[in-house]
Image (tube, protein in one colour):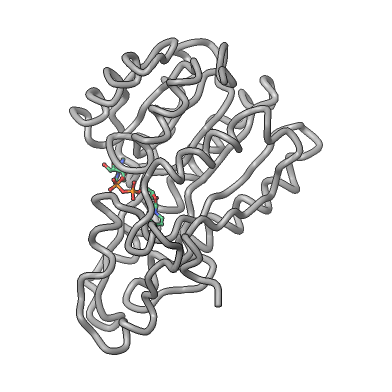
Length: 254
Ligand SMILES: NC(=O)c1ccc[n+]([C@@H]2O[C@H](COP(=O)([O-])OP(=O)(O)OC[C@H]3O[C@@H](n4cnc5c(N)ncnc54)[C@H](O)[C@@H]3O)[C@@H](O)[C@H]2O)c1
């Protein structure tokens, strides 16, 4: 498949994990990639790998999702690189856990800034270009945003916000031909995902259920999520907008 020939795709949080896997997946289908992350070295290495995987081009950009100006400037630089943008994949994120009453000051603001508010800033900055190209936005939320999760309420609230933002913009910009979709991964084998089930707590043992699917009964792989990003980002999903896709190896059902 060469679904991304001639397409320019911006992926945030692409130095590792799900963003990296998505970059390599889209690279293998001929896309031009703009890879943005606060980890400049990491995202530079992914750009190299993306070229080896078949990307038409791959450029690494540093930015800080916690900083509005940095988000807006990065988005403007991304559009200027090729003079067009077809897809934004909003994926940068952090996860913090702990008892609600013991969260350090500023943690709520930091989690919401990176996991939700940055998505808003970047979407606003690129939307006129996506209207011009008939492009689309795919964002990463989480099963936590659908179900909630003990010991990570700020994360869950931010992810629920990403879902609501996506559905609202899908409705508002459907007449302009821009699609918005959101993917809700369950537990995935990444730096962030590996930090999820660490605390041995009788309450949490009930709340953080393992996936049930045979072969994926501990973690899913970043590539499982990358395949869904490539679908939504491509013309195969021409009729999909406002979709919320849970991919969790049957973790949250039943
Ligand atoms: N791994 C899981 O189990 C899981 C489950 C549900 C949702 N998610 C979501 O998937 C997305 C990707 O996470 P991942 O699991 O691949 O983890 P990851 O830690 O491998 O990737 C997150 C990326 O975001 C970048 N990032 C973090 N803070 C940033 C900032 N301030 N500015 C710019 N970049 C920043 C990191 O450098 C990293 O490259 C996140 O939004 C995460 O919340 C992950």
